[in-house]
Amino acid sequence: MPPSKPTPATTPPSARTGWRDPLLHMLIALACAFALSQAFRTLGAMMATPLISVYGLSARQLGLWSSAFHLGFGLLQITMGLSLDLYGVRRTVLCAFPMAVGGAALCAFAPGFGALVLGQALIGIGCAPAFLACTVFIARHFAAERFTAMSGLAMSISGLGILFTGTPLAWLIEAFSWRAGYLALGGVALLAWLAVYWRVREPAPPRPAQEATGSARPSLRQALREMLPLLRLPHTRGILCFAAVSYAAFITLRGLWLGPMLHDRHALSLVASGNVALAMTLTGIVGPSLFGRLDPGRTRRPRWMAACATLAAALFAVMALTGQLWIDIVLPVFYGLLSGYNVLQYAYVKSSYPAAVTGRAIALLNTAMFLGVALMQWLTGAVATWAAQQGIEPLRAAFLTVAAMLAAGALAFARMPQARTAPAMPAP
Image (cartoon, rainbow, N blue to C red; front, top):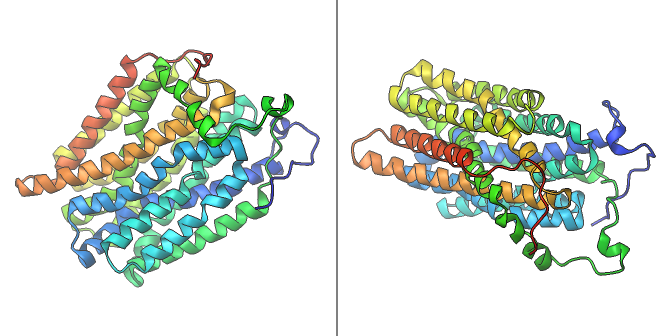
Protein backbone atom coordinates (compact mmCIF):
# COMPACT_ATOMS: atom_id res chain seq x y z
CA MET A 1 0.00 0.00 0.00
CA PRO A 2 1.54 3.34 -0.99
CA PRO A 3 2.31 5.54 2.01
CA SER A 4 0.40 8.73 2.59
CA LYS A 5 2.17 11.75 1.16
CA PRO A 6 2.19 15.13 2.86
CA THR A 7 0.46 18.01 1.14
CA PRO A 8 3.09 20.18 -0.51
CA ALA A 9 1.37 23.48 0.15
CA THR A 10 3.01 25.69 2.74
CA THR A 11 -0.17 27.38 3.95
CA PRO A 12 -1.44 25.79 7.18
CA PRO A 13 -4.26 23.38 6.23
CA SER A 14 -6.78 24.91 8.62
CA ALA A 15 -6.25 28.32 7.06
CA ARG A 16 -6.99 27.39 3.44
CA THR A 17 -10.63 27.81 2.46
CA GLY A 18 -12.78 27.61 -0.67
CA TRP A 19 -13.64 24.92 -3.18
CA ARG A 20 -10.07 24.80 -4.53
CA ASP A 21 -8.73 23.66 -1.17
CA PRO A 22 -7.04 20.26 -1.73
CA LEU A 23 -8.07 19.22 1.77
CA LEU A 24 -11.70 19.69 0.75
CA HIS A 25 -11.14 17.49 -2.30
CA MET A 26 -9.72 14.79 -0.04
CA LEU A 27 -12.68 15.08 2.31
CA ILE A 28 -15.10 14.73 -0.62
CA ALA A 29 -13.32 11.55 -1.76
CA LEU A 30 -13.58 10.12 1.76
CA ALA A 31 -17.23 11.19 1.89
CA CYS A 32 -17.85 9.15 -1.28
CA ALA A 33 -16.83 6.02 0.60
CA PHE A 34 -19.08 7.12 3.44
CA ALA A 35 -21.92 7.58 0.93
CA LEU A 36 -21.61 3.91 -0.03
CA SER A 37 -21.66 2.99 3.65
CA GLN A 38 -24.90 4.94 3.98
CA ALA A 39 -26.36 3.18 0.94
CA PHE A 40 -25.53 -0.29 2.22
CA ARG A 41 -26.97 0.40 5.67
CA THR A 42 -30.29 1.71 4.28
CA LEU A 43 -30.99 -0.69 1.41
CA GLY A 44 -33.18 -2.83 3.67
CA ALA A 45 -36.21 -0.57 3.26
CA MET A 46 -36.46 -1.48 -0.44
CA MET A 47 -34.90 -4.95 -0.23
CA ALA A 48 -37.16 -6.20 2.56
CA THR A 49 -40.27 -6.81 0.45
CA PRO A 50 -38.56 -8.82 -2.34
CA LEU A 51 -36.50 -10.81 0.18
CA ILE A 52 -39.63 -11.73 2.12
CA SER A 53 -41.22 -12.81 -1.16
CA VAL A 54 -38.24 -14.88 -2.33
CA TYR A 55 -37.11 -16.45 0.96
CA GLY A 56 -40.27 -16.18 3.08
CA LEU A 57 -38.38 -14.36 5.85
CA SER A 58 -40.03 -13.63 9.17
CA ALA A 59 -39.71 -10.22 10.82
CA ARG A 60 -37.11 -11.73 13.16
CA GLN A 61 -35.01 -12.98 10.21
CA LEU A 62 -35.40 -9.65 8.44
CA GLY A 63 -34.10 -7.85 11.52
CA LEU A 64 -31.17 -10.29 11.76
CA TRP A 65 -30.25 -9.78 8.08
CA SER A 66 -30.32 -6.00 8.38
CA SER A 67 -28.53 -5.93 11.74
CA ALA A 68 -25.63 -8.07 10.43
CA PHE A 69 -24.19 -5.02 8.63
CA HIS A 70 -24.30 -2.93 11.78
CA LEU A 71 -22.92 -5.71 13.96
CA GLY A 72 -19.87 -6.08 11.72
CA PHE A 73 -19.58 -2.31 11.45
CA GLY A 74 -19.90 -1.70 15.19
CA LEU A 75 -17.53 -4.43 16.37
CA LEU A 76 -14.73 -3.02 14.19
CA GLN A 77 -15.09 0.62 15.24
CA ILE A 78 -12.52 0.53 18.04
CA THR A 79 -10.01 -1.32 15.88
CA MET A 80 -10.55 1.13 13.03
CA GLY A 81 -10.19 4.10 15.36
CA LEU A 82 -6.88 2.75 16.59
CA SER A 83 -5.77 2.13 13.02
CA LEU A 84 -6.64 5.71 12.07
CA ASP A 85 -4.59 7.01 14.99
CA LEU A 86 -1.62 4.71 14.31
CA TYR A 87 -1.55 4.25 10.53
CA GLY A 88 -3.54 7.11 9.05
CA VAL A 89 -6.81 7.67 7.24
CA ARG A 90 -5.77 6.70 3.72
CA ARG A 91 -4.21 3.32 4.47
CA THR A 92 -7.02 2.32 6.82
CA VAL A 93 -9.76 3.01 4.27
CA LEU A 94 -7.87 1.44 1.36
CA CYS A 95 -7.22 -1.76 3.32
CA ALA A 96 -10.76 -2.19 4.69
CA PHE A 97 -13.09 -1.06 1.90
CA PRO A 98 -12.45 -3.97 -0.54
CA MET A 99 -14.33 -6.20 1.93
CA ALA A 100 -17.46 -4.15 1.24
CA VAL A 101 -17.07 -4.81 -2.48
CA GLY A 102 -16.61 -8.54 -1.82
CA GLY A 103 -19.57 -8.64 0.56
CA ALA A 104 -21.82 -6.99 -2.04
CA ALA A 105 -20.76 -9.59 -4.61
CA LEU A 106 -21.50 -12.40 -2.14
CA CYS A 107 -24.98 -10.99 -1.46
CA ALA A 108 -25.66 -10.56 -5.18
CA PHE A 109 -24.98 -14.25 -5.84
CA ALA A 110 -26.14 -15.58 -2.46
CA PRO A 111 -27.84 -18.98 -2.75
CA GLY A 112 -29.68 -18.60 0.54
CA PHE A 113 -30.35 -16.63 3.70
CA GLY A 114 -27.10 -17.62 5.45
CA ALA A 115 -24.94 -16.25 2.63
CA LEU A 116 -26.95 -13.02 2.68
CA VAL A 117 -26.27 -12.54 6.39
CA LEU A 118 -22.56 -13.28 5.91
CA GLY A 119 -22.36 -10.85 2.99
CA GLN A 120 -24.04 -8.14 5.04
CA ALA A 121 -21.51 -8.67 7.84
CA LEU A 122 -18.59 -8.42 5.39
CA ILE A 123 -20.02 -5.20 3.96
CA GLY A 124 -20.27 -3.80 7.48
CA ILE A 125 -16.64 -4.66 8.22
CA GLY A 126 -15.50 -3.06 4.95
CA CYS A 127 -17.47 0.11 5.60
CA ALA A 128 -16.38 0.32 9.25
CA PRO A 129 -13.82 3.14 8.81
CA ALA A 130 -15.86 5.20 6.32
CA PHE A 131 -17.43 7.92 8.47
CA LEU A 132 -14.86 7.67 11.21
CA ALA A 133 -12.19 8.47 8.62
CA CYS A 134 -14.08 11.63 7.59
CA THR A 135 -14.49 12.75 11.19
CA VAL A 136 -10.87 12.15 12.17
CA PHE A 137 -9.65 13.81 8.96
CA ILE A 138 -11.73 16.92 9.75
CA ALA A 139 -10.57 17.00 13.37
CA ARG A 140 -6.91 16.81 12.32
CA HIS A 141 -6.78 19.09 9.30
CA PHE A 142 -9.50 21.75 9.62
CA ALA A 143 -9.72 24.60 12.08
CA ALA A 144 -11.61 23.78 15.28
CA GLU A 145 -14.33 26.34 14.58
CA ARG A 146 -15.08 24.59 11.27
CA PHE A 147 -15.44 21.11 12.76
CA THR A 148 -19.23 21.00 13.09
CA ALA A 149 -19.87 22.67 9.73
CA MET A 150 -17.45 20.37 7.87
CA SER A 151 -18.88 17.31 9.63
CA GLY A 152 -22.32 18.41 8.50
CA LEU A 153 -21.00 18.81 4.94
CA ALA A 154 -19.54 15.29 4.95
CA MET A 155 -22.79 13.85 6.28
CA SER A 156 -24.79 15.72 3.66
CA ILE A 157 -22.56 14.44 0.84
CA SER A 158 -22.93 10.95 2.21
CA GLY A 159 -26.69 11.37 1.94
CA LEU A 160 -26.33 10.76 -1.79
CA GLY A 161 -25.85 7.10 -0.89
CA ILE A 162 -29.17 7.07 0.93
CA LEU A 163 -30.78 8.80 -2.08
CA PHE A 164 -29.90 5.80 -4.20
CA THR A 165 -31.71 3.43 -1.84
CA GLY A 166 -34.98 5.31 -2.38
CA THR A 167 -36.68 5.52 -5.78
CA PRO A 168 -33.60 4.50 -7.87
CA LEU A 169 -33.10 1.24 -5.97
CA ALA A 170 -36.85 0.52 -5.99
CA TRP A 171 -36.92 1.00 -9.76
CA LEU A 172 -33.82 -1.18 -10.24
CA ILE A 173 -35.36 -3.98 -8.18
CA GLU A 174 -38.68 -3.83 -10.04
CA ALA A 175 -36.97 -3.63 -13.46
CA PHE A 176 -34.40 -6.36 -12.82
CA SER A 177 -34.09 -7.94 -9.35
CA TRP A 178 -32.86 -7.32 -5.84
CA ARG A 179 -29.58 -8.96 -6.86
CA ALA A 180 -29.02 -6.16 -9.39
CA GLY A 181 -29.21 -3.69 -6.51
CA TYR A 182 -26.29 -5.37 -4.75
CA LEU A 183 -24.29 -5.55 -7.99
CA ALA A 184 -24.83 -1.84 -8.67
CA LEU A 185 -23.76 -0.86 -5.16
CA GLY A 186 -20.72 -3.13 -5.32
CA GLY A 187 -19.62 -1.50 -8.58
CA VAL A 188 -20.00 2.02 -7.22
CA ALA A 189 -18.16 0.99 -4.04
CA LEU A 190 -15.20 -0.02 -6.22
CA LEU A 191 -15.26 3.44 -7.84
CA ALA A 192 -15.30 5.06 -4.38
CA TRP A 193 -12.22 3.03 -3.39
CA LEU A 194 -10.46 4.26 -6.54
CA ALA A 195 -11.39 7.87 -5.68
CA VAL A 196 -9.76 7.54 -2.25
CA TYR A 197 -6.68 5.91 -3.83
CA TRP A 198 -6.41 8.71 -6.40
CA ARG A 199 -7.23 11.83 -4.39
CA VAL A 200 -6.37 11.30 -0.73
CA ARG A 201 -2.82 12.20 0.23
CA GLU A 202 -3.18 12.82 3.93
CA PRO A 203 -1.04 15.67 5.29
CA ALA A 204 1.68 14.43 7.60
CA PRO A 205 0.57 14.67 11.26
CA PRO A 206 2.87 16.08 13.95
CA ARG A 207 5.61 13.68 15.03
CA PRO A 208 4.40 11.58 17.97
CA ALA A 209 6.14 12.00 21.28
CA GLN A 210 7.37 8.41 21.06
CA GLU A 211 9.27 9.18 17.84
CA ALA A 212 10.70 12.39 19.27
CA THR A 213 12.12 10.49 22.23
CA GLY A 214 13.29 7.58 20.10
CA SER A 215 10.87 5.08 21.63
CA ALA A 216 8.85 2.67 19.48
CA ARG A 217 5.38 3.38 18.13
CA PRO A 218 2.75 1.85 20.46
CA SER A 219 1.39 -1.53 19.40
CA LEU A 220 -2.27 -2.11 18.60
CA ARG A 221 -2.63 -4.00 21.89
CA GLN A 222 -1.09 -1.14 23.86
CA ALA A 223 -3.31 1.40 22.12
CA LEU A 224 -6.37 -0.72 22.85
CA ARG A 225 -5.43 -0.81 26.54
CA GLU A 226 -5.17 2.98 26.46
CA MET A 227 -8.88 3.18 25.58
CA LEU A 228 -9.90 1.86 28.99
CA PRO A 229 -9.45 5.26 30.69
CA LEU A 230 -12.12 6.69 28.37
CA LEU A 231 -14.64 4.36 29.98
CA ARG A 232 -13.65 5.57 33.46
CA LEU A 233 -14.67 9.17 32.74
CA PRO A 234 -18.12 9.85 34.26
CA HIS A 235 -19.58 11.55 31.19
CA THR A 236 -18.69 8.63 28.88
CA ARG A 237 -21.61 6.55 30.16
CA GLY A 238 -24.15 9.20 29.22
CA ILE A 239 -22.63 9.61 25.77
CA LEU A 240 -22.78 5.86 25.14
CA CYS A 241 -26.40 5.58 26.30
CA PHE A 242 -27.43 8.39 23.98
CA ALA A 243 -25.37 7.14 21.03
CA ALA A 244 -26.85 3.65 21.28
CA VAL A 245 -30.35 4.85 20.41
CA SER A 246 -30.23 8.22 18.61
CA TYR A 247 -28.86 7.18 15.22
CA ALA A 248 -30.28 3.66 15.58
CA ALA A 249 -33.82 5.03 15.47
CA PHE A 250 -33.23 6.81 12.15
CA ILE A 251 -31.60 3.79 10.50
CA THR A 252 -34.20 1.38 11.89
CA LEU A 253 -36.95 3.43 10.24
CA ARG A 254 -35.22 4.47 7.01
CA GLY A 255 -33.12 1.35 6.56
CA LEU A 256 -35.57 -1.39 7.62
CA TRP A 257 -39.22 -0.66 8.43
CA LEU A 258 -40.17 2.24 6.14
CA GLY A 259 -40.71 0.02 3.09
CA PRO A 260 -42.67 -2.70 4.91
CA MET A 261 -44.76 -0.03 6.67
CA LEU A 262 -45.82 1.61 3.41
CA HIS A 263 -46.26 -1.68 1.55
CA ASP A 264 -47.94 -3.81 4.24
CA ARG A 265 -49.86 -1.16 6.14
CA HIS A 266 -50.98 0.94 3.16
CA ALA A 267 -50.44 -1.32 0.11
CA LEU A 268 -48.18 1.16 -1.70
CA SER A 269 -46.03 -0.14 -4.55
CA LEU A 270 -42.27 -0.52 -4.19
CA VAL A 271 -41.61 2.55 -6.34
CA ALA A 272 -44.20 4.62 -4.41
CA SER A 273 -42.52 3.54 -1.17
CA GLY A 274 -39.19 4.50 -2.75
CA ASN A 275 -40.53 7.98 -3.43
CA VAL A 276 -41.32 8.46 0.25
CA ALA A 277 -37.88 7.10 1.16
CA LEU A 278 -36.37 9.56 -1.33
CA ALA A 279 -38.21 12.49 0.26
CA MET A 280 -37.08 11.39 3.73
CA THR A 281 -33.52 11.14 2.44
CA LEU A 282 -33.60 14.63 0.96
CA THR A 283 -34.61 16.12 4.29
CA GLY A 284 -32.01 13.87 5.94
CA ILE A 285 -29.34 15.43 3.71
CA VAL A 286 -30.36 18.94 4.73
CA GLY A 287 -30.60 18.07 8.43
CA PRO A 288 -26.90 17.61 9.33
CA SER A 289 -25.83 20.84 7.61
CA LEU A 290 -28.70 22.70 9.27
CA PHE A 291 -27.84 21.47 12.76
CA GLY A 292 -24.15 21.98 12.03
CA ARG A 293 -24.79 25.67 11.39
CA LEU A 294 -27.27 26.01 14.26
CA ASP A 295 -24.91 24.33 16.75
CA PRO A 296 -25.75 26.13 20.04
CA GLY A 297 -22.28 25.65 21.53
CA ARG A 298 -20.78 23.59 24.33
CA THR A 299 -23.09 24.55 27.20
CA ARG A 300 -26.46 24.30 25.41
CA ARG A 301 -25.59 21.40 23.07
CA PRO A 302 -26.55 18.59 25.55
CA ARG A 303 -30.01 20.11 26.10
CA TRP A 304 -30.61 20.29 22.35
CA MET A 305 -29.56 16.66 21.93
CA ALA A 306 -31.87 15.38 24.69
CA ALA A 307 -34.81 17.49 23.46
CA CYS A 308 -34.46 16.30 19.86
CA ALA A 309 -34.26 12.65 20.93
CA THR A 310 -37.40 13.07 23.05
CA LEU A 311 -39.25 14.61 20.10
CA ALA A 312 -38.11 11.71 17.91
CA ALA A 313 -39.56 9.26 20.47
CA ALA A 314 -42.88 11.09 20.29
CA LEU A 315 -42.91 10.83 16.48
CA PHE A 316 -42.44 7.06 16.65
CA ALA A 317 -45.25 6.76 19.19
CA VAL A 318 -47.59 8.71 16.91
CA MET A 319 -46.73 6.49 13.91
CA ALA A 320 -47.26 3.41 16.06
CA LEU A 321 -50.68 4.41 17.40
CA THR A 322 -52.35 6.14 14.44
CA GLY A 323 -51.57 4.13 11.32
CA GLN A 324 -52.89 6.78 8.93
CA LEU A 325 -51.30 7.09 5.50
CA TRP A 326 -50.64 10.83 5.58
CA ILE A 327 -48.99 10.53 9.01
CA ASP A 328 -46.83 7.63 7.84
CA ILE A 329 -45.65 9.81 4.93
CA VAL A 330 -45.30 13.23 6.59
CA LEU A 331 -43.66 12.18 9.86
CA PRO A 332 -40.81 10.15 8.28
CA VAL A 333 -40.06 13.07 5.97
CA PHE A 334 -39.98 15.48 8.93
CA TYR A 335 -37.94 13.00 10.95
CA GLY A 336 -35.34 13.00 8.18
CA LEU A 337 -34.76 16.69 8.91
CA LEU A 338 -34.82 16.21 12.67
CA SER A 339 -32.29 13.39 12.50
CA GLY A 340 -29.63 15.95 11.65
CA TYR A 341 -29.25 16.50 15.41
CA ASN A 342 -27.01 13.41 15.42
CA VAL A 343 -24.17 15.57 14.08
CA LEU A 344 -24.12 17.38 17.44
CA GLN A 345 -22.84 14.19 19.09
CA TYR A 346 -19.53 14.46 17.30
CA ALA A 347 -18.98 18.06 18.27
CA TYR A 348 -19.89 17.10 21.85
CA VAL A 349 -17.38 14.22 21.88
CA LYS A 350 -14.65 16.34 20.29
CA SER A 351 -15.02 18.93 23.03
CA SER A 352 -15.20 16.28 25.77
CA TYR A 353 -11.86 14.49 25.31
CA PRO A 354 -8.23 15.50 24.77
CA ALA A 355 -7.15 15.92 21.15
CA ALA A 356 -4.66 13.06 21.43
CA VAL A 357 -7.47 10.50 21.76
CA THR A 358 -9.97 12.03 19.31
CA GLY A 359 -9.89 9.01 16.99
CA ARG A 360 -10.37 6.56 19.83
CA ALA A 361 -13.15 8.59 21.48
CA ILE A 362 -15.11 8.87 18.23
CA ALA A 363 -14.49 5.17 17.56
CA LEU A 364 -16.01 4.40 20.96
CA LEU A 365 -18.99 6.61 20.09
CA ASN A 366 -19.43 4.87 16.74
CA THR A 367 -19.17 1.46 18.40
CA ALA A 368 -22.08 2.35 20.66
CA MET A 369 -24.04 3.83 17.75
CA PHE A 370 -23.79 0.85 15.44
CA LEU A 371 -24.06 -1.86 18.04
CA GLY A 372 -27.15 0.09 19.08
CA VAL A 373 -28.45 -0.11 15.50
CA ALA A 374 -27.82 -3.86 15.43
CA LEU A 375 -29.61 -4.30 18.76
CA MET A 376 -32.56 -2.09 17.81
CA GLN A 377 -33.08 -3.74 14.42
CA TRP A 378 -32.82 -7.24 15.85
CA LEU A 379 -35.03 -6.39 18.84
CA THR A 380 -37.74 -4.69 16.77
CA GLY A 381 -37.76 -7.70 14.44
CA ALA A 382 -38.14 -10.06 17.38
CA VAL A 383 -40.87 -7.90 18.95
CA ALA A 384 -42.70 -7.65 15.61
CA THR A 385 -42.67 -11.44 15.23
CA TRP A 386 -43.97 -11.87 18.79
CA ALA A 387 -46.68 -9.24 18.21
CA ALA A 388 -47.90 -10.99 15.07
CA GLN A 389 -48.26 -14.21 17.06
CA GLN A 390 -50.35 -12.32 19.64
CA GLY A 391 -52.62 -10.72 17.04
CA ILE A 392 -51.03 -7.26 17.45
CA GLU A 393 -49.94 -5.23 14.45
CA PRO A 394 -46.19 -5.93 14.14
CA LEU A 395 -45.26 -2.37 13.15
CA ARG A 396 -47.08 -0.90 16.11
CA ALA A 397 -45.05 -3.05 18.49
CA ALA A 398 -41.81 -2.30 16.63
CA PHE A 399 -42.32 1.47 16.65
CA LEU A 400 -43.32 1.56 20.31
CA THR A 401 -40.12 -0.33 21.09
CA VAL A 402 -38.10 2.30 19.22
CA ALA A 403 -39.94 5.11 21.04
CA ALA A 404 -39.23 3.52 24.44
CA MET A 405 -35.53 3.04 23.65
CA LEU A 406 -35.18 6.64 22.45
CA ALA A 407 -36.88 8.01 25.54
CA ALA A 408 -34.71 5.87 27.84
CA GLY A 409 -31.50 6.95 26.08
CA ALA A 410 -32.41 10.64 26.22
CA LEU A 411 -33.32 10.39 29.92
CA ALA A 412 -30.07 8.58 30.78
CA PHE A 413 -28.03 11.19 28.91
CA ALA A 414 -29.83 14.07 30.63
CA ARG A 415 -29.42 12.61 34.13
CA MET A 416 -25.82 11.39 33.90
CA PRO A 417 -22.77 13.65 34.33
CA GLN A 418 -21.86 15.74 31.28
CA ALA A 419 -18.52 17.09 30.18
CA ARG A 420 -18.02 20.86 30.30
CA THR A 421 -14.37 20.90 29.22
CA ALA A 422 -11.95 18.38 27.77
CA PRO A 423 -10.63 16.63 30.92
CA ALA A 424 -7.24 15.17 31.59
CA MET A 425 -7.21 11.44 30.98
CA PRO A 426 -6.97 9.12 34.00
CA ALA A 427 -4.08 6.69 34.04
CA PRO A 428 -4.62 3.37 32.21
